[in-house]
Image (tube, rainbow, N blue to C red; front, side):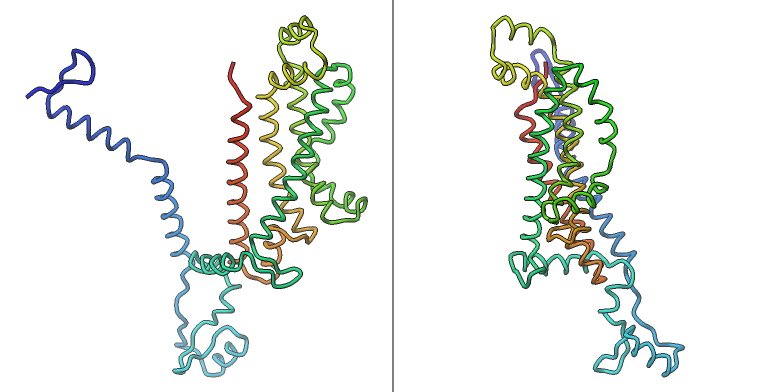
Length: 318
C-alpha cells in the first residue's frame, strides 16, 4: 500500500509514513523544559537523600549521658518517654533538606506583605527595596556611561587622554569603593545605590566608546552631507549605529550591578534581599539563607529576562 508524500513526486509506504510520524512526534516531546525538570528532580532527590538524618538511637548510652545531651538541647523527650533529636537544634546542624527549605519558603511567602517591625519586613518589601536600589543605580550609570562614551568615541584625542584612567578604575571592585562612599555621603541607602552605579558604569562606558569609535564613516559622511544638527546626528545616526555594541555593554553592566547590590545590602545593613541573607545567617537559620539565595536567583532571572526583551527592540543585524 502506497501513500502520497508531502513533496511532489514523493511516495511513501504506510510503514514509512508511520515511522516518520513517530520520529516527528518524539522530536516534539523532547523539549528542553522537560529535560530541565528531569535534572531538577534528580538534584532534589540527591539533596534529600544526602540530608536525611537517622533517628536518634539511645542504645549504648547511659542515663547520665542522655541527661547531658538533653540538658545541652541535642535531644528531647517525647510524651511517651522516648528520646528524639531536638528539631530546633537540627536547624543549625548540617545543611537542611529540600523539605525544610520549602517549609521556610512557605512561611516567608505567606508573610510576604507583612511588616512586623522596623527591621522585619516581608519578602515582597525586601525584593522591592533591592530592585529599587538596583534600578536607580543602573539607570543613572547607564545614562552617564552612554553620554560620556559617545563623547569619547567621537574624540580620539580625548579618548586617548582619559583611557589610562578608565583602565585603572574599571577593574576596581565596586565594594572597594563602599567605605569611601559611605564616609562621603554618610547615608547607607545612597551608598548602596552608588555601589551599584560604580559596578554598572565602566562596562557600558567602554563598549559605548568602542562602538561609536568603530561606527562606519559612511554614516557620519551622509549625516554631514544632509547637514544634520548635532542632536539629530546623535539621535538618527550615532545611537542607532552603535546600538548593538551599547546593548552588549549594558548586558555586562546589568549583571555586574545585580551582583553588587546584594553584598552591598549585607555589609551596609540596609533592608533588602542581601540583608535577609545576612540576618538569617546571624540567626543560624541555614534554611533561611538558602531561601534568600533562591530569591536572589529568581529576581535576577526575572530582571534579566525583561532586560533581554527590551534589548531585542533596539538591536539589529546588518
